[in-house]
Length: 279
Image (cartoon, rainbow, N blue to C red; front, side, top):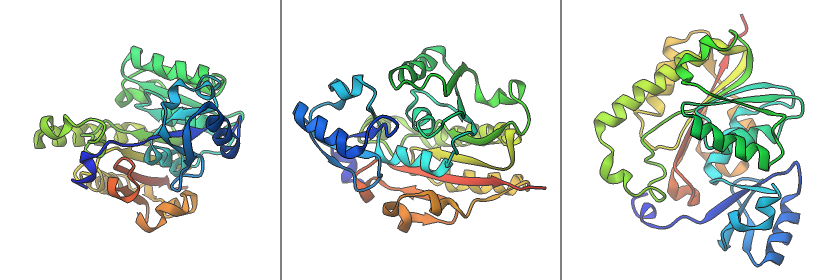
């Protein structure tokens, strides 16, 4: 992991399957002069070896989004159905929000972020991908969601929590110099608060997914375990593996998945899935 964190990551894109197939997009990008191929990690992903995909005509047309393969796994874990009401806490810049929305028909994603200028980024992506009918945005501290939304009002809730970012060190090399143990403990506290606030909004039988882009157990396994211990109305979601690509199956342990950068040359990511019991 230390060795790969010193290498530059390849750019990866997520195909908007509502508009185009992966095979068709690869053909179009190849004609544009890009060197791309299908990802072996996620079925809707492509890898670029030459050219910035954000400058392509396909990007402007809404055929693809720039997103890391590990990050794409989160929407798979959430497993939103076509008509679901979904809450995406800490949603900016909108990669996971739009990925979820691409799988909906009449369903909606309520995308929250603390800062108005970051909410604007989500709106821009929703507009580019023609998903504005499926995405509602709001500038809000997600620790206050109970003040704005009904109890048990959502089929799926995603908390992609603020974290130390130790899984994206290749993209943010300053992390290795700036993050301290105190930072990790403070972040762990915020992560628990976010889960605590969102839990009552999940419908019975609904799913709550917690994710981070770190590799630190204090923010990952320990937060997930603490949540289950303090919320007897939730249980570990043992069906996580049924929704995930074959590539990551060996790394799933029950209701959690930890991806390290050395597995696929993608970002380090943690995902935990919880199900609210039907009482």
